[in-house]
Every structure is written in C-alpha cells, then in structure tokens.
Amino acid sequence: MKKVILAAAMGVLSISFVQAQSMKNTLKVGVLGGVAVPNENAGGNVGVDVAYQNLVTPHVGIGIATGYNQFFGKDNKVGGSTLNNNNFGVVPVAALIHYYPRAKGIYVGTDLGYSFITGDEKVATNSNVDRPDGGFYLKPEIGWHNRNWNVFAHYAKVFTGDDGKINVGNSSQKYNAGSIGIGVAYNIGLGR
Image 1 (cartoon, one colour):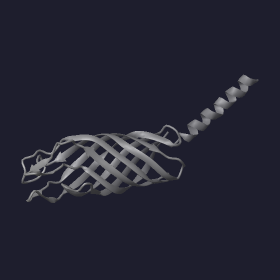
Image 2 (image 1 turned 30 degrees about the horizontal axis):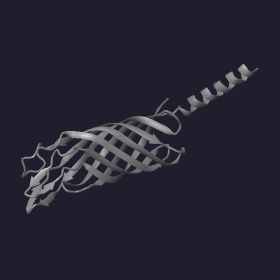
Image 3 (image 1 turned 135 degrees about the horizontal axis):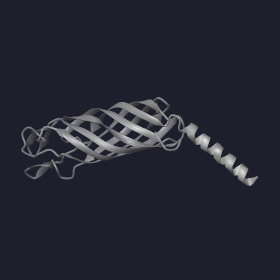
Image 4 (image 1 turned 135 degrees about the vertical axis):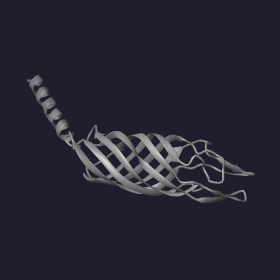
C-alpha cells in the first residue's frame, strides 16, 4: 500500500510539474534606454533586447540574451583639450537568470556574458586611441512582471579594463560602456 501511495504521489507531482511548465519557453523582446555612467565618453544609450527564457521551476528562468545598444558619444574636456567621442554599439551574448517570487509582481535577474563593441575604430575623432573590441558583460535588473510584460530598471556594463583610455597631459578619459536605465519587454510564449 505504501508503494501505491508513493507511486500516486510521484504521479501527481510529475503531472503538476508538466502543467507548470506548459508555458515555460518564452521569447522576450524589448526596448530600453539609459544614461551612461560615468558619462565621460558617452551621454546615453537606447537599444533593443532579445532573450530566450526557459522556466526550470515556476520561479526560476534561465536562458540566453542578446540585443543591440547604441551609445551616443559626447564631447569631453580633458586636460585643457576637448575630445570628440564617437558613437558606438554594444552587442551582448549572455546567459540570463531571473527569479520570480510570484506569478505576477516583482522579479530580479541578471545577464552575464561577453559583449562586442562596434563602431568607429577610434574612441574619438581627434584621437589615435583604438576603441575596445569588447569585454565581460553584466546586466543586473529589478522589475515588475506578469504573463505578458516585464518592466524593469537595470545597470549594464561592459568591462574593458584600460582599453580605450585616452591620456591628455596629466589627465585622462577612461573608456566607458556602462549605463543605468529602464526598459520594457513583451513575452511571447513558445509553448511547452
């Protein structure tokens, strides 16, 4: 009798798990914008995010993320000179993990991976310093979600080390590909 009860309980748990996973695959398509931080070589950014997420439990989603962010270069006074910084793009290739405490409400998550930096070869039009090609990518976010939408605040950063740093006399401008901003994403259910 104990074996029958255990088998029945395992069957109910299995069916519950399969039903919870019935909409576990999602394509997230969104837009975002932000302010560059620190804003030495860029003033802000706008972009699109595309991600695939699989709910491995009703509360935890993992997947892959990419997109494109356009950063707008800005003039920056460094050591008595003005650097005319170029626009550049950021293309991440990242793993994502999101935690959803409830079916609707607050969530937290992050993207981790590598991001390519595209655009002009030089950091500034009046500099001979090459822009970085990319670096480690991090994008933590917190937001609100329901079945169809995610609205979030985020911090995104491409870590480039000293690549792209411009020295002018005793002063310097570090290369920045980071921002704080907000975004919205629409969830397209892909089924089981």
